[in-house]
Length: 528
Image (cartoon, rainbow, N blue to C red; front, side, top):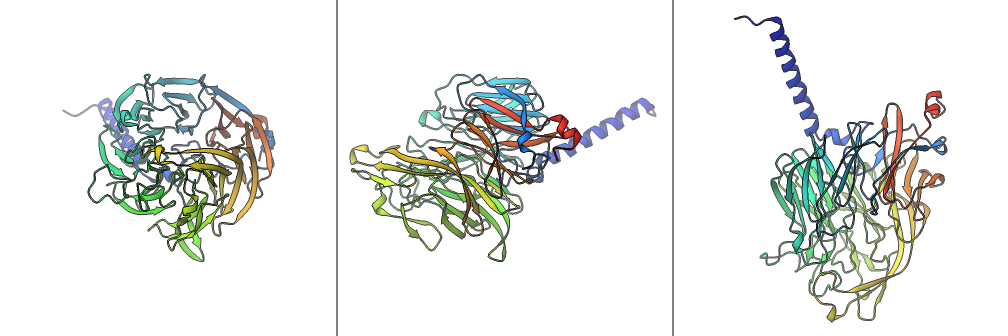
């Protein structure tokens, strides 16, 4: 029987629909979409795979930034500070605190749904954010679970354990999607636990592979010298052409008792490059050999392409918690540059591989040792930014001193020692990535800052100080152009453009604030 026109139209519509769905799926699985996201999105923790946290948007400029006005505010109603990066996809922003996830309208902040995780005994120190894939949102929990929720209504699709929280693991991690691999790490340096990072199937929640930065206790031929730790609690970065995933690892445990874990203790306090399809280590670079001060190298490995000393290089930049700025060749992990970017006194020099050499006189001791930086580090989880136009690496730094103690009675487990802070000043630093030279400093106030950094093609930097202000600075010289007292900024700002209007979104205390230029200024063209 010959089909009628109605049947033919339905069949054609079905074919077109299936073809469109296939195209959408291909787009979702294509790493290029996270290399160069659309202006109306912030689809992953760093904004894209590079970790540069730099936006091409230019509507807000040094000339008009003083006109910024509040577009909306979203109150979480929690006592907990927002530390998460807002993720924006299809006009919806997803923002988190420990045990909580909100989906809100990116234009108005109207709540679309909220998910609250059941009461648990996990460590509620903070939360970094979510990842998205197809119609799912992925959330990690304080008791080290990974949840897949329906992006439309927040209903749980599946729930799997990343690690055993009863052993001392917890999670604050924002997962990273690489094709059909969802990469997620954990924290846990109060106990002697191996460092783990897992690849999870984003459709089913099945573990695809596990990478150990330090092997489980009792592993034959243990290369770490008996150290555990090296947790991977920050979101890494990815080079699709090399097919390498880069992530920083945390401190060894026992933390301050270094004598019972001789040697360099790889791969703690390191930058490691993994094959995301297999979880196999391709190379590693240790920022702090044999760390005894809790100086995680979990900070963001930022990917930059360009010339270095006249030769084209695929570079990896990191400002590490130990006070040193590193430039590596990310194809093989060799050092191109190592230089201090903050106050340091713990190293006696650099070795042939560009690694700082620990000074034995700066080991924690019964009568205490004055060390720079302090335990909070020369920087920390707050993300840096790289401005391609100027070549400046902008980092929220901390010049600080602390006193470290260790006595035999402190033991061989977990922290295994003591410290206290002496002094510290926050400062935003602009580092020339070619030389390590600090181009300018902008003071942020007493104590360790908590705000990350965003740069834009218009020549602006957005961040926060320690006095509760959101800031806009000029990239060229760090001059203050605008500020707003919204409470202490604990996350990294993001920016996007919807309906021809650029928004700046930043957390202040337990609220999320969105700023934009007045609509009449945009309509008249005076905003340009």
